[in-house]
Each structure stands twice: as C-alpha cells, then as structure tokens.
Image (tube, rainbow, N blue to C red; front, side, top):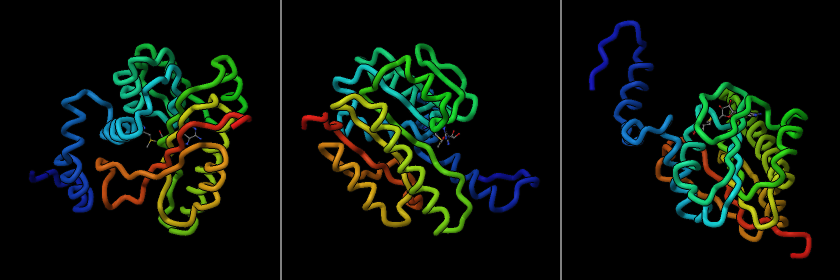
Length: 211
Ligand SMILES: C[S@@+](CC[C@H](N)C(=O)[O-])C[C@H]1O[C@@H](n2cnc3c(N)ncnc32)[C@H](O)[C@@H]1O
C-alpha cells in the first residue's frame, strides 16, 4: 500500500503503512474490536483458560475497550465486568466503566461495592520516555502496583494478567507473586509485535490464607 499524502513525514508514512497492513488490525476491524490488542487477551485467556469458572472480571487500563469487549464476548459465565481507565472510554453494554486512576482512593471506594474479583487483567503501560533505565523503573513500579492491587482485589483462587516490559530484572516481583499464587508464568502472545518488549505476567490461583 502506498501512502501519498504529503503532510505525513516518511516516518509517519512507514508507521501508517505497517499499521494498515497488520493482520491483527485488519482482523480487528472485521471482528468489530476497538483495537488489535483484543487478540493478545484472546490468546492469553485461551492458553490459561482464564474464563472457566470466572464470574466477575476487572479490566484496569481498559481504554479504548477491546479487552473489555473480549471479556464480554468470550466470558459466557461472567456476571459482572468492570473497566477502569484514566481516559474516557465509550460505553459497552453490561460493562461498568469508570474514569478513574486505579491507584486512587476514589477507585478503592468504587470497587468496595463490587466485593472481590475472579479475574483481573491489566494492559496498562507507563508513559515511556525512551530512556531505557528510567523506563524500566517506571514499568517495574507500575507492575508492583498492579500486583499489590490485584492481591487486594482478587478472591482466593482468582487469576491475574499484567503487561510489563522486558527491559530489566523483575525477579523480586515474581518472587512475591509465587508467594501468593499457585502458578506464575510469563507469556508473549503471537499478536504482540515481535519488536515490542511487552510481555504478560500471568498469575494463577491466588492462594487462600490456609494454602
Ligand atoms: C495500552 S492501553 C489499554 C488498551 C486496552 N487493553 C484495549 O484493549 O483497548 C493502556 C491504558 O492504560 C491506561 N492507564 C495508564 N495508567 C493508568 C492508571 N493509573 N489508572 C487507570 N488507567 C491507566 C491508559 O490511559 C491507557 O488507556
């Protein structure tokens, strides 16, 4: 595909061409998903059977909404889906959407009315600067916050998925997760671009205090 518009720089043209030719971008428009990110969650939930037995799911960093769309279309047993983002997100039928920072007190108050969740998924990215070491620290801090949050909001037996960036050592976070979950692993979906350092931490079956 040739992009002829002169107002685009060569770099933007290259990005746009790659985007428009991307198989998951084409597929997402056919399947009516809001973004290609949908296929990453589909791969993760299929591989780890995350929706079997899940009745309540929470999507943090949910905008524009394709992960919530996947939870809704694939989660036949889900009775409640809650989505949170700092940004506005267009509504999805039967999904409770909130514009809120997942780390805020306002968010804790909102979630108090839902009780605990069976599944928490996070596709949140920090605002990356391009500086490898400071970006790694930001990504690590975010991952630690997501894990702490999930430990507070998940039911015993619940599962968690969180994006992080493979640019440094996260062994301490993995160690914490292994204390609290029966199985901890990482997974790079095929639909995640090869050149991206993003990868997903998957924590299965939160232990109960007597485990
Ligand atoms: C990569 S996008 C998520 C895409 C989404 N999974 C989808 O499929 O449509 C990451 C989102 O995380 C949100 N985010 C970043 N920090 C956040 C925070 N502290 N609380 C809530 N959302 C946050 C951003 O606003 C952004 O919309």
